[in-house]
Length: 614
Image (cartoon, rainbow, N blue to C red; front, side, top):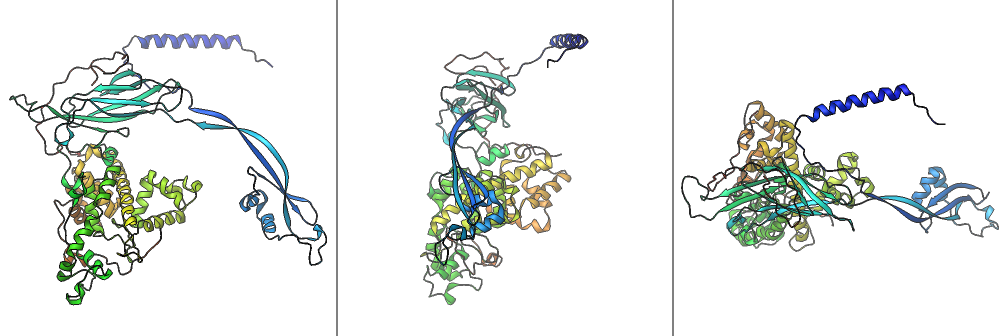
């Protein structure tokens, strides 16, 4: 049946369209600035037709030969018990599972005389189905080009370009153009590579948004970055001439950055490192020898004496205090081995630091404070590994580091269960994962010569680094919840690391209260300020942060300190701007921004960042 259209309705519709056209014409008389936007394009999926076979089984009664249940599977082997239970229910499943073989003995002469149920393959049916497959999207990555890093620290000897490289993973498709905005000015490059010239930006940097369009008809995800270019030295000083060779300090914050030198936590916080470089306790040296320490660890020495690794028979009471720590005599006997032991993890710490961008010196300082480099598990507090990971710490890394959770969860639970996400798991499942993670970093090994599985100890370093990344995420969320701004906008880089160390030790609740109280009292969000507003139960974390951030080396542990340190009485073991864009293809002309005079920055010692005060 065809639907008739009322002429009156057509007349009203035409009048409405004419009115809209007049309105749009009036709006068109006003200047409008066009900004390129990524096109949605077609859905990046493909439908495939797959062949498969349906095997139909009947569950029959021996006595009546009647079908009591039908089961459908797509594999040649017999249905497994789970499949039988799914199709038939618990009652029939229990009857089938208790059925024994039908044997011609004990007076049985016919199958009808047997009890129970049996499986029978009734039909085999070839079939096809359509499956929608999601195709991989195009991506854009950024790096520096034209940076001749000859000066110390990797500074560029000339103003470099920011290179955008787009990747199209689909065969027979290619990147048509790369688009974006730099400091809110649009730029466009045809093809898959685009070099954007950089100019001095100031200490806060400038924002960039970028994406790529594909011949497939769609666009990549829209990415963001923040770029900082700071002239280094006296060459830009307008007051006097200088023989200094021009150098520029350049760094980039973006998830798409493929260069070196960016901290993952800095990206999370959107916080640039100090131009002069991070403080000593937040650095990662190139060589293991540069991470060497020679601190006197009395608890470590005591554990070595009890393990029989040190000959301290000449000392009274074998060189041991009642607490389990070494005496002065015991420390003197154990010192050569203590020095070797505390440095044997240096290479793995540096490797993990380069893999995760968690500073190597920070990790070593925390290991020193937490375990004195003995990665066993303590009976009373249930903490394990070099960083003494607790179940509370395991909860943070599983919740706030989804990438780690995705890798670890299937080792304990099923893939289907893990897909729900840690926050959506049952309490029992969450507890199981937390416990499994703590045990996974436990390196205690009663059958090992030293009492420690060194392979497992090295593994715990990687897990610990992921837990620090999770704490960075949590710190960023705490700051955002209290200020509505990203952490890097309101807190200095070094203070953010101190917040993270405090968060690892005392928890997000303590940090949140300190931040809130500082803001209520009109204080800038610095570590010095929030430490004044912590609850009494949280104030022990202040000394913890001060110890971890103290450099060039940690103070030797005293016997008085050891009285508050848990002693492992039993060790458990569990197996295991755009004026010109350089490119080889044609460039779409874009507006040229007004040139900004190059500001003068003498070689700075720290980031000039204004505190946030509400």
